[in-house]
Image 1 (cartoon, rainbow, N blue to C red):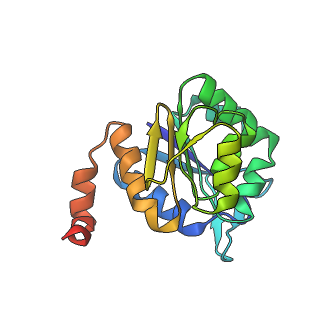
Image 2: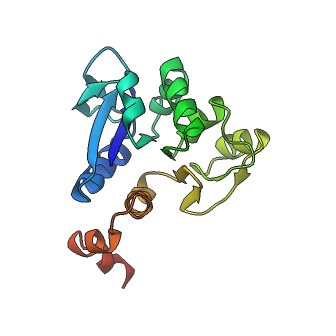
Length: 186
């Protein structure tokens, strides 16, 4: 399975990088994808990351795209016509799309949230935006509705990643044990 994590200036580093780490541990082919003209992208906490590739049409061959939150990262993703084009393409082709924290605003701009069950960062701004667009907003940590997988924010990234692993046919239980995640639930 090939997974592209889209990075825009101001992305939430913890969400993007820990997610990439867990998905790589699950043996998925994960690429950090720059949506800018630079392969060096600075996150919302001034950590700069070197991406693997630039956003282009080759992404259409991937199995999943993931949109991390962070500000202004999520708004930069939302304001990119190429990102919106890819989100629409993945949705129309029933390919997986993940969005965490503020990133469901990208799904809203792409016009794919109506009658969809999803979640986001728990601020009234995001809740109201999504509800007003016809989404069935849920306060769960991770929400799966067909090809959409959404989550709440930085502290929920592990649950989000493990749900993605399981949804794509991996085994998160092995990862939880090797990463000592199982110790948190005792």
